[in-house]
Length: 152
Image (spheres, rainbow, N blue to C red):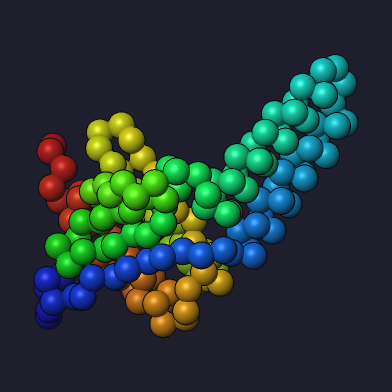
């Protein structure tokens, strides 16, 4: 069986996702509807939902925030190299809480002891072959390397 060193690097450059935009809009609309039926200071809560919606659209959907992930490179040794919109490059490791399914992959990346970033990727972000390769590699390798290296 081949080792992880035989695998080529996998570059993910997420673009605009209509599915992510729809998901963010629907969940925030549902939250706003739930807040509107509450008695009391609902206006303040609606303001919080609107602020969250604006932040998610800016940072995750449109990826315009300086801290948004522009690209993620899964290197052959199992480490990740992420590039932010600001141009800053960071080393990361894959968290065991990463989720992979056919319609959605959520990469949870650790940037150190306390810093984490999530990269939600709906299937409309990249071509089907790249999506298949990412899910396959996550299933085979995943975060197993990080769990083996973790101190007991």
